[in-house]
Structure formats: structure tokens, C-alpha cells
Amino acid sequence: MIRNSQWDLGISFVGCGSAMPHKVITNDQLGQRVDTNDEWIKSRTGIGERRVIGENESLIELATEAAFDAIKMADWDVKTIDLIILATSTPEDLFGSAPKIQSNLGASNAVAFDLTAACSGFLFALVTASQYLGSGAMKRAVVIGADQLSKWVDWDDRKTCVLFGDGAGAVAIESSENESGLVGYDLKSDGSKGGCLNLSQSNIFLDLVQGVTHQKGEYLPIQMEGKEVYKFAVKEVPIILGELLDKYQINSECIDWLLLHQANQRILDAVASRFSIPSEKVLSNLRHYGNTSAATIPLMLDEAVRDQRIKSGDLIACSGFGAGLSWGAALFYWHGPH
Ligand code: UT7
Image 1 (cartoon, rainbow, N blue to C red):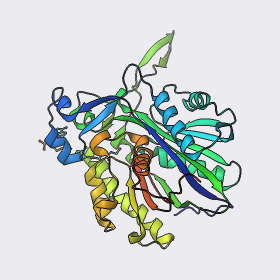
Image 2: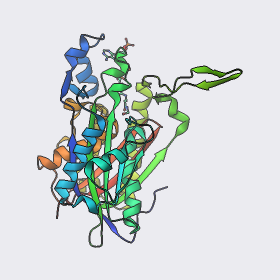
Image 3: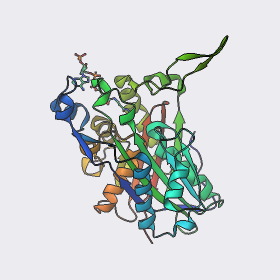
């Protein structure tokens, strides 16, 4: 089923931003730690290097910087922001990191909360924010995707450690009576396949008092059945995008940019070829950042807007996918600042 995005108001994309950690880890450096090499990683994934948050950096700082850049591009007074959603699976505080970002920004009139949907998180958060704006309940929102998977990767597991990196990206969106940037979207979940990709709690129980134990708050490193997730992505992403294009009667030739979650270059290429989208229209920065989970889509968007590949009025076909399993797609026009 495709959800209807016929609201009273349209959604306009008016700003974007991103922020990356300084420390770069190359494939060759990883090869010094685990049995891997640059050739394998590049040919199987397209990844050349990734960034890792170091001692003098933090996820909240990066997310704040990305949000600040998006707000600056939109040319908003921070006091006019109504909503901040932080899509993350790696908050600094399990009670929520978004309020700290709200405070850092001085956005004192905004309500701020975290949303978790792994690598689909940004898209889920974007659609969530859109409901508030489209209904007229709120006017301006900042949607952030930020993750620090380096905290949860097993750096001795070559099957996963070569894939992930840290980073943050953000967009500024507002309701609009004249323009409708967000054409349509769809979101999906399949918890029955959730075991393919997990960052799950450890099942350690400790004695509390006589006859009562309590569970220790602790998580296991990321575990992934890469092949299963790969098959899921190359099957489901074309389906969900194809249904959206059909619903809105948009020919794939009209897509200016294919903006997918940056997990693997082979996934990007496979999806593009299903729609006969030429490689020049496929956005990819895997080479530099790897898979930054909820951050990949806004990070890539920001890069392509700032180097002027994406121009005002361009149509973007976007899809996120990952743990849950969860996936989603959206068609939107980039507007840019007024
Ligand atoms: O963001 C969440 C979404 N995540 C994804 O979309 C990830 C989707 N999955 C993938 O991108 C791919 O499945 C991977 C990149 C994770 C793995 O690529 P693959 O082509 O599916 O490789 P594989 O797991 O089938 O492994 C092939 C071989 C194996 O060796 P044998 O059994 O053929 O001897 C692995 O042990 O490659 C070996 N291998 C490695 N070799 C060198 C696995 N990882 C590495 C490595 N370096 N890092």
C-alpha cells in the first residue's frame, strides 16, 4: 500500500548541512588489523575510507553542526523552528540526544526527539516531520541523520568492520502553500527478517536481591548476514521506488538524481540499472565515507547541493534500507533557499 501524501500544505526542502569527524581510516589501515585488503573492499563495496569520531569530537557536536549548516542555508531564525528529529541508532543518551542539539542550537521553541530506524532512520524521520508540517500543525523542521557505528562495530570482524563509518547530515524543511517538494513516499518494515542485522542487547543477568535478578544494560557488537541484507536491498528497493513512480505517473527518465542509502556501490548500480538510470545520475560518496547509517542520505544530499550538482527544481528519487528490516522511499524536488 502506498500512503497518501495529499496534505493541506506542501513540504519545501530549503536547507541542508553535514559534518564529519576528522579522523580518516583507510582500507590499508584496516588491513593492518584484520585479514582484508583495499582491493577486496573497493571491488565488493566501493568503499575506500571512512571517518571515525575521535576523543575530542562527539556525535551531538557533529549533529549540531550539520543542523546549524542546514538552518544557515535556509536563512532561518532558530527561534522559528518548531521541530527537530534526530534519526540515530547510536545516541549519546538512550533517553534521547535531540534535546541537547535543540539546546546547542538555541532553538528554544522547537520540540526535539530521537527516532530509531537504523539506516532507514533519516527517511522515516523525514516522513514523520512531514506529517506535522503537511497538516499545518507545525511550520519548520530540522531532520538530522547521525550515527556513530564505530562504537558498536567489532573491529576484529572483517565482514562488518570495513563497511561502516561515522557522520551527520541534516535538512531544513518547511510547509508551503505554493510548492510541494515532497511528491510522495512509502515506508515498510519486516521484523521477521530482523535477525539479519542487529545491534542487540546482551542477555546478561545479575543478582539484584535474594531470588531476583536484573538485566545488565549492555549491547553486543553489530552482527550482519551481509548476503541476506544485500538480496533484500536489491529486491525491495526497486519495488518500492517503482510503485512510487507508478503512483505519481513519473517516468524514470524524469529522475534527476538517484539518492540511495550508501551501503554498497553494487547495490546502487543494481537499483540504477533496474530503472535504466545512467551512472552520472547516481549519487555516491561511499568511497570517502562508507556506510554512515542514518547519515548517508542527508550527507550525500548536502555534498551534491553544495558542489552544485543538485540544482533547484531537481527531482530526487530517494530510498533508505537496513536493519529492522526496514526500508522506504521518497520522491522529492530540491528547492533550496528562497
Ligand atoms: O546499511 C545496512 C545495509 N547493509 C547492507 O546493505 C550490506 C549488504 N551486504 C553487502 O554489502 C555485502 O554482502 C558485503 C559487502 C557485506 C559482503 O560482500 P559479499 O560479496 O556478499 O561477500 P561474502 O560475504 O559472500 O564473502 C565472500 C568472501 C568470503 O570468503 P569465502 O567464504 O568465499 O572464502 C568472506 O570470508 O569474502 C570474504 N570476506 C572478506 N575478504 C576480505 C568477507 N569480508 C572480507 C573482507 N576482506 N573484509
